[in-house]
Each structure stands twice: as C-alpha cells, then as structure tokens.
Image (cartoon, rainbow, N blue to C red; front, side, top):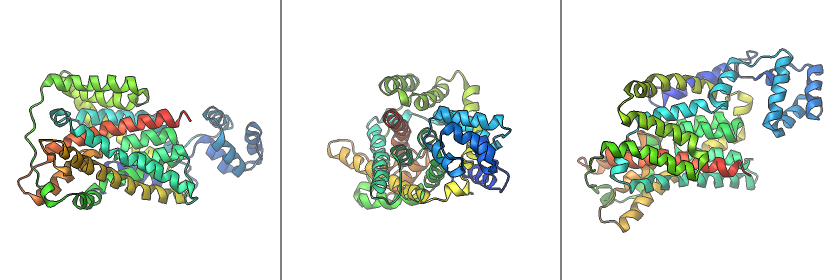
Length: 398
C-alpha cells in the first residue's frame, strides 16, 4: 500500500478483512443475519411476505427481484424479530447507500482543482470528452460478454462497470451504488487499482500511437487566467449541465461548489477543511463501506474477473481515444497540441497528467507538459460526472 492509492485501498482492504471474519457478521444487514441464522419459523414469515418457498435460496432470489420498498420492509421486519445490522453494513447504508460519501469527496476534489489550464486552452475540453469513449465502449463490451453467454451482466451492471473507464473512484462508487450495489466492491477495487496503475498502463499505449516527432511538440505557453473567469466558470458549468442533464447535478454540483469555495477566496477556512480534514474522514468511512461488499461468497465470482478485465480495456480505450483526438485536432489547428496530453483525459487527477509529462520528458528533457496536461485532466473529471449522469438518466428509465 506504499504507492498504489493507499489512502483508499488500505481502508477497503481492512474492511474486506473485517467483513470476512466468520460468525462476526459485521457486513451483514439485519435481513442477511436472519437468513444466515436459518430459523424455520422466521424464514416462513419472510417467505409468506414475498410469496416464495420458505428456504434461503428462494428468499434471496425473490429479494433480488423485489422493489426497493419491499426490500426495506423485509429489513425492518428482520429488525423487529431482534436482528441488528453489522457495523460495516451501517457504514455502507449511511456513506454509500445514501450517496453522501462520494458526493462529499467530489466536493473535496473540486476544492483541490484548478480550472486555469482548461480555461487557458479550452480545446483540451475535447480531449477530456474523447477519453470518456472508454466508458461507453466498456458498456458495450460487458453486454457483448453477456450476449455470448460468457459472463452474465445486466444493462445496469454494464453501465456501472463502464464508469471504471472514467478513472474516477468517487464517480464509480456513486454510480455503482445506484445501479449495481451487488458489484460495488469489485468495481471500486478495480477503479482504484487501475488508477494506481496508470503509470504502467498508459505509457505503452501513448508511445504506440505517437511518433517521436509528435512527442517532441512544444506547446504555446498558457495565458494567465483572471480571477473573475475562475469564479464564474464553476457556476456557468453547473447551470449549463444541470439544466440539460439534471441527473449529473449532484456530482457536478458538489464538484463546482468545492471549486467555488477555493476560487472565491472568502471562505479559506471552509476550503481548507474540505480539502483536508473532511475528505480524509469521509475517505476512511467510504473505504470501510466498500470493504463491506467484499464478502468472499459474493466477491469471488466469475463476474469479478470480467470486471477486472473490462476495467483494463476501459482504461486502454480511454487513453487511446484522448491521444487520437489530439492528433485529429492537430490536422486543423495552427497551434499544435502534443498528443501525449490527450491521455490525461482520463480523470485520474493528477496522476494521468504526471504520466503525460514524464513520457514527454523522455523524448525531450526540456519539454514540460504538466500544466498543459492538467487541462484535459480536469476536463476528464467533468466528463466522467456527465457520463455518470447520462447512465443514470437512461439506464434507470429502462
């Protein structure tokens, strides 16, 4: 855990350890505790409410098909029978079930983000948008695996898996919590693991798609962005996106609010708290909550292997799409873009931008691309939030 996203993978790993302690039931809801107890009389009561056979397997199948309101009624019934949810199950309900923790983390990310490089070179917004192609390509990939009977994925599950391609952990957790809670553990582990492996995954793809000459392109110095622009941008961005795509408003709203606190300069105490203390506290509970979904009998499934495989594909396609978009823009642009910054369109902030800079320095030790790469990197965060909104709007409507 020394270098690879330890701030979240350590709590997730320990949460997984706690959730798999035999007989402790720390990750079980009250209803799951009831089912694990195998009391015939209690199973009969639950089965009667669900109109199914009074055995554990039949009840689980009926619950999987039941409406959320019915599932909630069964949970309350289990509580009335004397069962209590485990501590990790409570963390999950409060932090992820409600959607609060990923949103608070997004607010913290917004407070850490500088939109300056994006505003100084608005074309980089297209690079961030192109990198989101990996998300939708992965959705099709998951549905293809299901079509050929290799691994079973529903449309909501495929959409939740696809968001891994955005390289944005909080967005992946938020979306999978809404669309496919049963896959949340595997999706979160895949998202954060591949974010940590960006320095290994991206460079071979970047080098394969660019020539030595392209990697040596020196970009025009970025202009200085005024304070007024930085204050207005998050407000205008939120209004435009929220009016066109209300489902993206929670994620983007928190992100823009955090950024406004940073740029306004009048609430430095709040901005500092959000960037440091608050985001650290929420990260602990978010990690433990994700760990609650790593119970062995649910996590060690063929679907998990499919998610890990699709996650790599998503990252690869997103990286390639960003690089190719930069090359396309160069065909009709006077001021050339170094295609290496296109790979920063995946929203692993600031890791992807650092990788772009590092690969650029290998070809030209005097070519510093970091600030140029932060433009598409920040655009990628916006893009992944919008992609999540699109998924929620259209998948939940089906």
